[in-house]
Image 1 (spheres, rainbow, N blue to C red):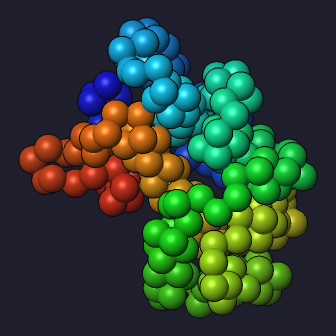
Image 2 (spheres, rainbow, N blue to C red):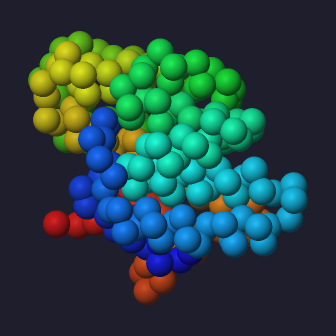
Length: 216
């Protein structure tokens, strides 16, 4: 699975807020061919986490249907989380919020909020956003004491559905979304295997949790 993780960690561009097609069809086929034996090798109590990890791999590849086929049948907070992200990416925002509510307070939320606030406070963050409504929504998100997935869904909807035309806001939301996906992917792998997710670049020692996507 390591080369699949490396490919996704280095991908450029980052996943779209509202993908129109699978990013890499060959990668989708590779995930399908390797994931069955991998999940079967896990202990019975860890297979739901393993399937959640695979659902996440598909979603990082913008393969919404393949991810949904798995996540809709995983009755765990992680499964609901991937399910909610998938519906957000397909533009079904009400449904996304429903599944996010079923997640509860996920363990990745503190780290995700920390990463999001850092991005929002950078010069290319809130200060660079021109659309006042989007800026206000993201300022509220940054001011929240805890990560609020519903507010993030609202901000994504404003941009992805054309309510606001702001390239800086779109790029910022994509970066936050990517951190969310990488943190959840690492959490699922750790829960399934008891190990840390293999480094995205063994030479640099970087984990996918630290990934910013490929460099231009």
